[in-house]
Structure formats: structure tokens, C-alpha cells
Amino acid sequence: MDRRRNINITDVRFYRGAQGDTDHQLVITKGAAKECVGEKKHNKNKPWFDEECLKLHEERKHARQQWLSNKSEANTKNYSNAKRNATLRFRNKKREYMTQKIQEIEKNGKTNNIRDQYRGVRED
Image 1 (cartoon, helix red, strand yellow):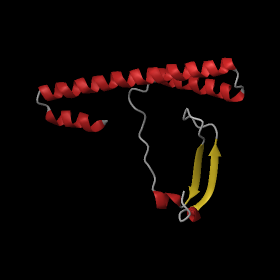
Image 2 (image 1 turned 90 degrees about the vertical axis):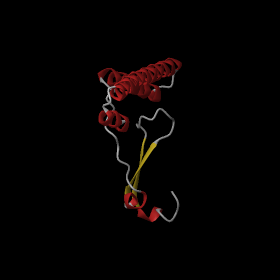
Image 3 (image 1 turned 180 degrees about the vertical axis):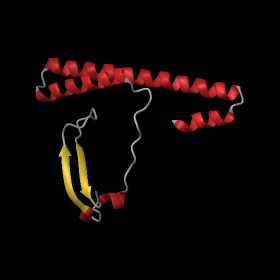
Image 4 (image 1 turned 180 degrees about the horizontal axis):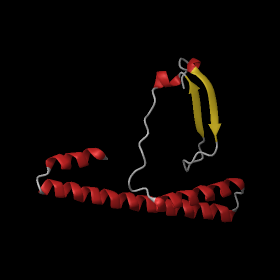
């Protein structure tokens, strides 16, 4: 952050447990920075993210915590496998969802249901 804006920051926190699947850490600032920079609104969970995805996410999170506490070769392999499985499943779930949405939009276009067609395009 550049110097002209740092007078607005009153508190900075450093969080190690953020799940970004990177070696970077989450930094949260408090203060009047929202006024200068703005605040991003977060989207709700996507419809394709179901209980199976939540379970895979929790497994990946648990494997990461084990790997952070003890960086042995077994924990590294376990974390790598959990991360790979979760990522592949998330990708496939999203692809299935998008394919279904595209088919629905195409069906609306073929039946001249233009309003629902454009509504479906705008959603995601």
C-alpha cells in the first residue's frame, strides 16, 4: 500500500490459517481504508458446491493443517493428493453445472423464450 493511504489504517492482522492453497498469508486491515479503497461484495456459494464438495474441502483443509504441523514426506503426499482430488472434483462439478446451464439457455432460445434465455445468461 502506498504511503498516502497508510494514515487511514488503524490495525493490521496477519492470519496463517487462510485457505488459499498458496504459501502467502492473509492480511486484514482495519480502519478507514474501506473509504479509500472500497469494499468488494462477495458472492454467495455457487449452486454446484454441494455437500460432497464441502466434505472434500474439509479433507483438504485437515490435510493442510497436518502438513503445516509436520512437513514429512507422507504428510506432503497426503496434502498433495487431497488438494488434487478436491480441485479435480470442483472443476468437474462446475463443468457439469455450466453444461446444464448452457443446455437450458439453448432450450430457451429454441422455444423462443427470450426473457428466460437472457435471464440465464445474466445469472452467472
